[in-house]
Image 1 (tube, rainbow, N blue to C red):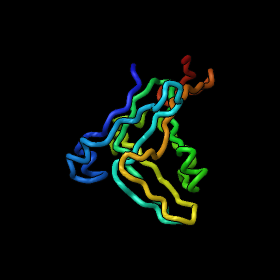
Image 2: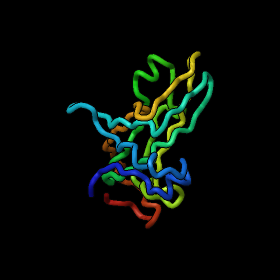
Image 3: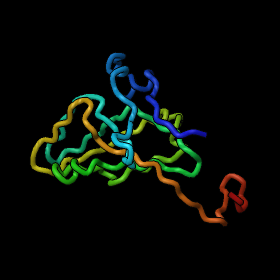
Image 4: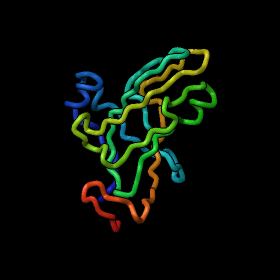
Length: 154
């Protein structure tokens, strides 16, 4: 099994964002900016502004597949919080493996950003809007498997 980001399908893009093939073809898959960066940078698909006190639901146009024992954490870029007081509404987004290709939206990841500052927060297409970090996680040894009603051996 491999871990990778990919764009949602154009059909899902049309439902969630808009029917614009040029826009769909123009945005980037998240990437690391430096050799030792822990996070993959997500970019804004298009321009937007968040007014002071406003919450904005921001589409990423991205879905992710990962290993069975991993989770993707979505974290606001430090400069957004530190310089502009813009935060993720849930502080950290948790994307589980089984969100990928779900029947509701293909696993399209969104951000809910809140401007807690006193000035408009202006984002241009291609600006970084969050970072994604893959993290390994552990499970308890005696976990009850709800699908088989028995203790799993994992």
